[in-house]
Length: 338
Image 1 (cartoon, rainbow, N blue to C red):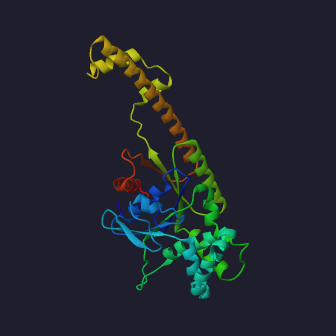
Image 2: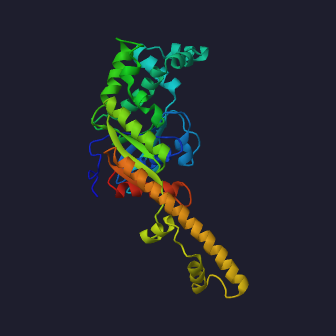
Image 3: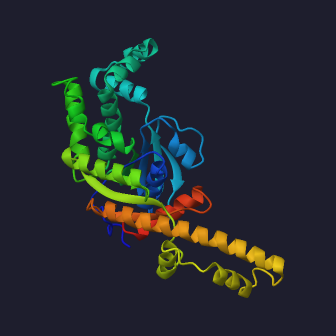
């Protein structure tokens, strides 16, 4: 697959959101690796101060600076930035008012924290503004410093408000640097260069929250990307077996005979009792699996209503270690998402 043969050709800012527990940070990290594959340079940004990126990549806590954290397949580089809202405000004060020294004094007095607490919209503008600057940044030759930016964003329930910065600062400033800064951020976030991706599980609550989030973004005229369906279990069993399980038509005696024929249990009376108990337990497991498969099919159909590309990422048997991240990145690339 060529570097431009993707669903998101032209997108430079990938915002990743999802309900808590869906693996949002893990998917954001895997997407960054996938986008960097083949020699590209990608920045992975964290905005919630949880040090989730450091945990996923098994690194010490990240400072407020851009640093290389991983090499992607084919030689690409992934850099990371854990944004500190307080540091971002100091940068803002220096950039627009030349008040860095005073900003540090204000920080010691607690004024910065007070300001961002009573005006959370300002905090969001500063955080998204730092990310937007990385999107626009060029080197001395005029080339973009990063080929793509991936933002590990706030959860689905807050994503529209977080990104809708112009609306959020309307009550704070109607003119001046804050307003101009917010307009600049909005120009990046609402442009075709941005896509907001959702991470979901095949469960009712994450699916409904995803559909609600997609609708809210459309309402705010913000760009919807794709849906990453995470932790997908393999079906594993033929359809006729699943149908039989749902209809409770399992013949336990036949299952017990099958276990004996396969040499999994012996021929003694005691072994026959064991075979019967194992067959019963096996039937219950298959029935539970069949019900889960049916529910997952229903949730897939619900997600299809969003009308946006969907990508399925496997449930990793050994958990999400660094090797697992690369496995997820390959799955993302194989489906044309990067």
